[in-house]
Image (cartoon, rainbow, N blue to C red; front, side, top):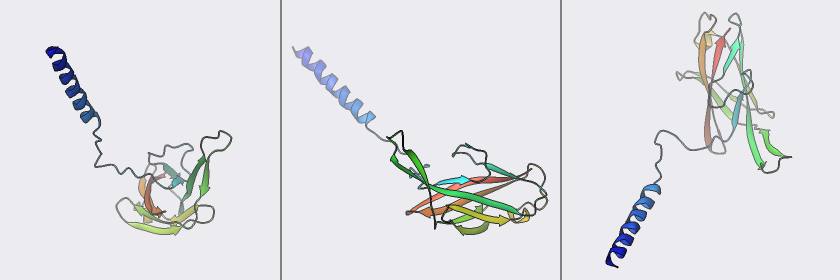
Length: 160
């Protein structure tokens, strides 16, 4: 009988120790868990380009004017459980977006229209590429705030 209670105590201690170790939540100090409030769809990027990647939009190297443009969309998930409705993309208007080089140089600030679109005209020189050749890349970011949450989307401009 004494052996039986000893084994029960050991079992209870092991279960408590297991519960303590599995109940710990380890947070990643490098990743912010805030979900972006809008989807920034880069116009000219290949269709279906993954959101976690930096899409490259190609422009001819001889172009004198490059139009950087994107569409800001809010996802309406109210019909997510109804297969006839699904998730709807609603254009977001009135959002200020700062378009900058990844080096920190500011290219400009634009505000989204009723269709959710923002665009900015630049030259290769303004993107830091004096004489573009095929394959030249300029890395840019699109940053704004919507409903109190800041978002950033990266993209690239590539000479073709």
